[in-house]
Length: 255
Image (cartoon, rainbow, N blue to C red; front, side):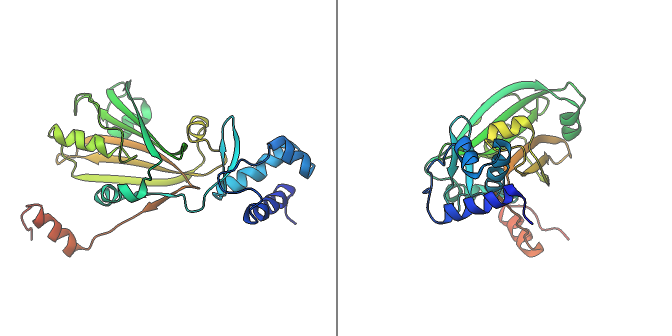
């Protein structure tokens, strides 16, 4: 037998499907819904968290819960060239990307990620993307001061911090290999606050490192992508296609 919060979630799904609350409209207050279903507010919130994890509603802190427009998903592509070329379709007219820059020191986690000593100076670039005023992704990029001097990239465009790579390239730092590790987990309290999600809404966490020809880590990135509004695309090119691309770029044929 389903738990009470699951029964309430089923009924709320039915009401949303029936158009009781149109897309983008605010739902009744949590206290009102709790009274309607004769349950405590925490139980009602469990129902709402379930709907939010499914992408049916979204919570806006200090305002309320809103019915989401279907299909509002953003794609993160593992192929960086594909991600750049598809930036326009993925980012709508109402989208925006904010950028904050800070000088920080590497803690134990960042030191391990970037293969540096704890305390090494870094430039931190924090990109937060929004779609129709709703947060969609959190990207934190770290560049060691030993690799490149601090600079200000463009914030608009790709929410994944591709402008930082363009900055590195302009300073003569070329990325030759990128490794990404994707895991599913719950967000930290700070990540949940930034992304306007519950701490019980799963996220995709991407840990990315980029190295140059000498295997030096020139960029590290930590991306947090809400599971209810994101998808990850993995693109693999055949050996023939990869060789053709290298020749087009002017690389000599090997073997």
